[in-house]
Amino acid sequence: MLFDAGAKIQQTDFTKSKQAIAAIEAIKQSTRSFLYHLSKEDKIIYHSVVLHAPYIVAMIEQTNLKDQALAESIDKIIDQQKDQDTKKEMIAFGHQLQAVFFEFTAAVLQHMNKEETVINEILWSNYSDKQLIGMEVEMMKQASSSDSNWYTGKILKELSNREILMWVDIIKEHATPFMLKKLISTARIVLPIDRWQMIRGKFMLPKEIANKAAA
Image 1: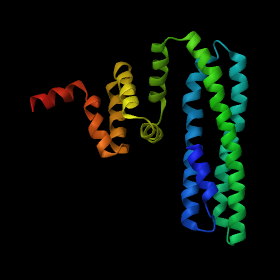
Image 2: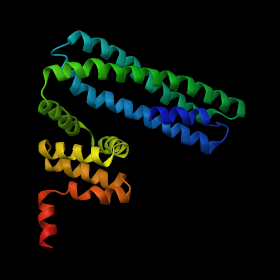
Image 3: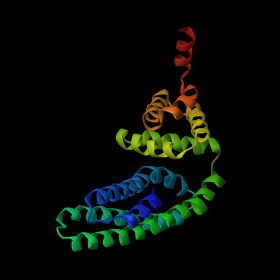
């Protein structure tokens, strides 16, 4: 999402309303995704890591506050777009937005690298696969309905069918039927019809399978 938005903003002529709106929407999707990640996922993950590495978590959380402020500053800059009247002002707005978004991109990539190299190592060293899956299920439980569906939908679109089916197998084993139904509902909405038809059987709950067999 970051790289797609970055490419879009570089190619956008901000004096043309349609192009500007498309670029701004891509940027807003990126900042929304990151803020969701901080508010939902990190709370559970860091709570598990802090027991084993409190100083590392304290350091990362300080950085996250700066990253959050940066994401929020992008939204404030976007709010200024309606005040741009001349072509010169619109071009200047585009340059400002691009500069701040690229700074945000660098911050998010650093954030992801810390999670991949530091946080993951601590998790793998101190928790079993089953416990880690439990954390993922807990993140799904804590998420609000609208943000959860939106965020999950974004993930599903990026996964291959094989990756989706592996994810569903894990959720079936550990999640509640209600959570699984939410995942099924989101997949049915966001996936293209041909992809949904290819994997829909794997999503079926035992009761649905029985009903289909009876029919």
